[in-house]
Image (cartoon, rainbow, N blue to C red; front, top):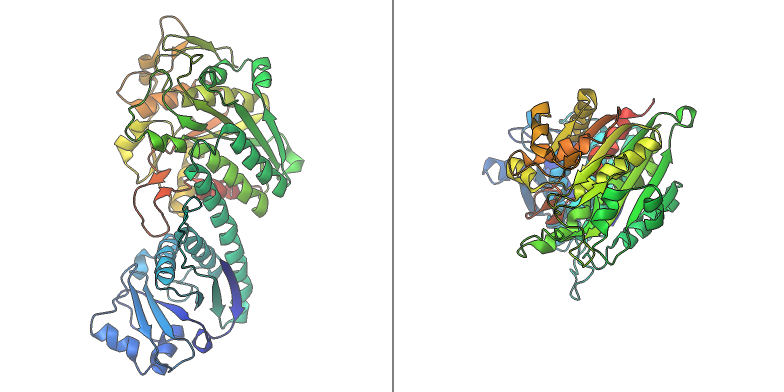
Length: 500
């Protein structure tokens, strides 16, 4: 879909529909909605008086203009109360109205920027959130359906009468498109079936992202992992016929300080059967999405390469399947990690912490001073938080707070969990340095603590996205299936951490 920006008056546009917005309990006084109301003989005011139009968040009212103005339809979008208004509301409401427009078959639309007037938001930030919400809300994964949805929104023009704002609005729209495209690519990757999104396929996606973003890429093969003694990662992969890949992207945004490297690690288990400790068959198909962390890392890098913040990032995706083949590792096996520490494999379904352990050691061998890992690590996080927010853990309160702040600004909330030393008793091993599980209690904390055992002096934050990487419902800009969380948070974080 095409989104463009134009200087002009929305009431004069000869398009299929125009969109204006209304806040709850705010009277029409001027602006585009006030002008449209006058030209349509008070049609909007009458509906407000009758209680049909209230301005509540997400409310959509379609008014046919009957030839009184060039456009055939006026859509009034409710934005809720002014005091609750922010870019997250814009993003959410934009997704709602975009799907409504598509549903009624409208193809060409003009709109104003939501909330840059009464809402008081910066036009650029508002325009960026609007473009994001529209493209995220219109997302569909229907490439394997023979009867694809025919209705589509072809073109949306964002308009303003103030020439001083147009440049900011255009910059915001372009930025929103970049981020939405990255999120939707992440959704596509995580929605793909496991037979078509193998570790090799992920490496091909990474190569495309690296080439388009002028980033250096390296893909470590099994022989490289054996040379580096990545016993934990290789142990997970040995039950699969698919070759494992350790994908490494390098973004050098601050060449003058190449020692300041932030590592971003994403779990890339393209299918998680549980291995010998096999999962129940019910719902196992969703385990194609166990590489959502890896997809988020790669797609965040796609956006970073376009936005170009002044920061150095080392992105690593350990990609493999976890399968119960004849060569699969067994409960009771002991693996030696790249760090030299040994792990007793208590449960082969606790594989994410094993592949991330070796990825973290590799990142530190490459000079990373800050590490963020993203993983669909534990079912326990969904029990604790549902699909409302992502669990965050770490050893550096400042870095954790920066992650939480970035998530809040992007509408992807996080909740911090404790990392008390006493939890470590749960995964002590009688025969190795540690076990890869610690029983049922505090499962998400134990998973994070085990990963933390391999962080050697770096600042570190762990994001458990098992509850937020997938949605079973449509809400605003969120669609059923893969959500693309936390691509937007990661991009915002790196922009915040960048040297100005």
